[in-house]
Image 1 (tube, rainbow, N blue to C red):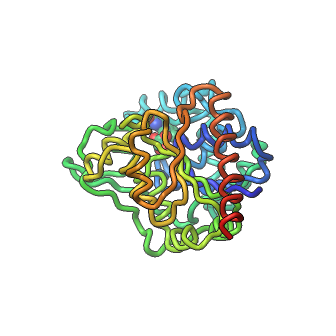
Image 2 (cartoon, protein in one colour):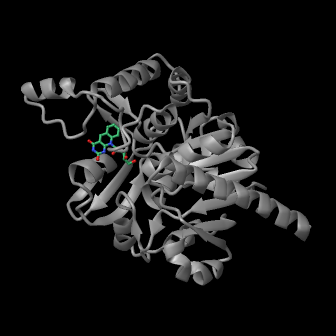
Image 3 (cartoon, rainbow, N blue to C red):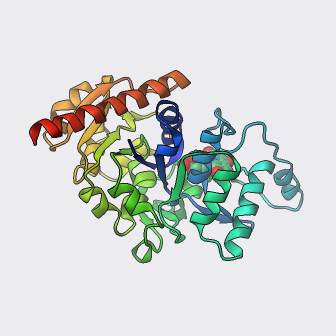
Length: 318
Ligand code: FO1
């Protein structure tokens, strides 16, 4: 059973941790959002790629949801002595990842190659592909002007109202090598419980990806990032509201409806089932909140069982 996951952010990393416990990690290909990427101090920083790799490697800081556990911040504190006012907290060990990746990019490696070396060095057995090797950072237009996603998310703590989101250079971007094939050849494509605008949206915006999602014969299953009308972490609910979408699982289902087969809702959103099914998307409900490792494993196991049913159903229909 080959599984391809579209992933970005903390919720995705949690689900993937569970998935890697219920199927062989070698059967998982992760297509990671790179819209969060930012260049600071001359370094290329890829938060969603690093969050997935650190989490699957067992090194992530599970309290913060990003960076490396037990990291120190001596470099940043010395930068402050020089008058810098670092707002993006880069740990000393985390900096090694950005230094190594930036050096590889500088010597001509693609982001895909750099990512593959990092995940292999940390012993991650699942493939991790950036959505594209082009640099396509997400910019947020707010009532305080336009700013890089990280300025909005970290520096301004998601307070400004979001008027628009754009992915720089996305029109000229191409899916990274293996991305389209990973979607077309998978038995399951799982849209992880990530922010539909700034984590899954950039991946869908890479030319060719949405076509592949529509074409693939694999089961396309999304897990709702909205539970009981709000996001468990991050700005998804506020963005849905600011951008004129209904802040609900139904609001998210509408964004994926063009390619989605099945939507996993939390039990608390049972009332949305009929409306989502009216979009032409099948719905199943379960407990989608992942606090413990066992929660993550259980949700992943639940989704894998759905695929068997889904394939079975399709066979029956044929
Ligand atoms: N998120 C924060 O809320 N504050 C930070 O200071 C911060 C630093 C940081 C450094 C490296 C990295 O890979 C991620 C980091 N994040 C931080 C998370 C980052 O904003 C991600 O883009 C979010 O997790 C959304 O995916």
